[in-house]
Length: 208
Image (tube, rainbow, N blue to C red):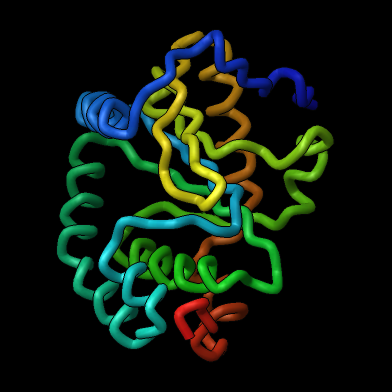
């Protein structure tokens, strides 16, 4: 079994990237991927997004938030088609704690739309990562094409704050394998959504 210490991310062994540098670097690596897969682990239960749908959700306009998610379908389908043409996929593992936070309820609607458009998304519960969290929750991590690992950083309020980039092959591989194992053990987001999210009333937000 993988030891928790094998997943340790030491900031001094990576390179700190600003928000814009992270976005540019991520786009460059993702654009170059051919025939290899990428992996993302989402652990936090609350974030602050820069997104029209999220902004509508934050202001308590739930129906508008859902409508704006639906408007993203064409772009999502194009992105999924590009991935298929390049023989690659971006696999996403979402740790979900229940009862859901308002943010996570919104995000699961977003993930449902993405999955319906061809994105690869699965859900795991906190019990499935507990063995690796003796020292605290797992970080938010993205592995692109088995070449680069980003520890994505957030402010205390949950806003994006850049990333630390790691290029050490062994570390990148361990994290890629770890997220892949979680993905294989996880539940597809669509049946999870149908069972645990679809029937919920609109979430209460601070704006309300």
